[in-house]
Image (cartoon, rainbow, N blue to C red; front, side):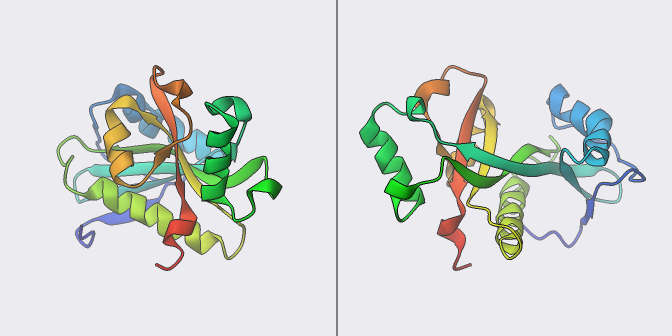
Length: 182
C-alpha cells in the first residue's frame, strides 16, 4: 500500500489526534485517552497515520520478552520443536526471548481491508530489524483479539500455545530471523 497520501507521526504530548473510529471502543479509547499518558510514562510508543481529515490508523509498541515455560506445551517434544525453530542450540536456550510487543493496532473502519494493516506490520518488522543494530530483538509478539487471528496468521504469526484457545485474546509471535535477508 502506498502511504504517500498519508502523514506518519510519532505521538507526543502536543499531538492533536484527529477523528478516529475503528469500530472497537477499547481501541478507540486507548488512542484518545491512554496513548499520551502511556507515552509520557514510557510504557508504549504510539505511531499515528493520518490524512488531511482523520486518523486512518495507529499502533503502539513496547519492549517485551517471551517467557517459554514447559507447561505452555502439550509435551516435552512440542517444547523441543518450538525451541528448535527459534534457536540453533535449543539445549542452551534462554528462558526469555527478547521481543517487541504490538500493544495496539487499529485501522479506521472506513478503510479496513485496504492493506494498511499489512503495511503497518511490515513497518514494525523493519523497525525491529533496524533496532537490532542497537539491542537484540528476536520476536514480535501480540495478544491478538479473536477477530484479528486470521490477519496475524496471514502475516506469519504463530500461536505460542493451545492453552489460550478459549480466551478473548491469543498470544502469538513472529520470529524475526525469517526476515533478516530483507
